[in-house]
Length: 229
Image 1 (tube, rainbow, N blue to C red):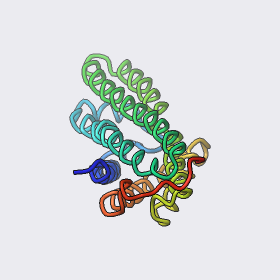
Image 2 (image 1 turned 90 degrees about the vertical axis):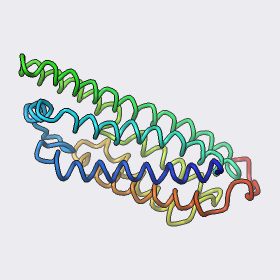
Image 3 (image 1 turned 120 degrees about the vertical axis):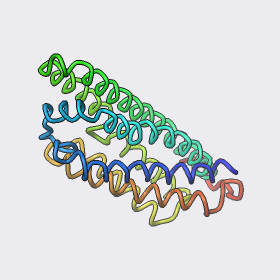
Image 4 (image 1 turned 180 degrees about the vertical axis):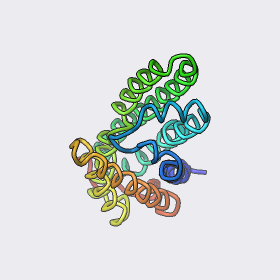
């Protein structure tokens, strides 16, 4: 199997982690305030006491598994985009690596928070709440609460694909829209809504990229058209 085909499956896996995350969020975590600025820390700690494995599973899939799949996708997209826009492809690769590192870091911190809180809460609920709030803030800062790094990366990939005609027009348009949603999470008043736009847009974009890498022409058949971008 070629790198691009493998990257196609990795892109579909990225989409699957987002879908899992949304379903779990809506069905289980929404009552706790997850995904909003009104999260109930005490309720979360109580949830962790009862079912710590659920949050560890959620964190591991939406963060760690997603980042590992993203790493494979980065290599595949670098190969696809580099055939026509080598400079932008390299910038996209570096930006993507930064995002993948932030995502996997957020997942590790989130899981440590669950493990430590589960250990402390039975004896000191107040301390457990403070600890979870602190580590959760770090998690959000790395990427769980904003999508700046992801938005910039998807935007750069989309521009490279636009200049080099490396991906389909629909995929490029979805990427630019998703990128805008990610960048808008920087605005506190619009953060929650923009986060939803980014998440849903990313699902469709990852699927579109996956299909393109699996069934579109590979970089081996592409001819470089410019070395400027």
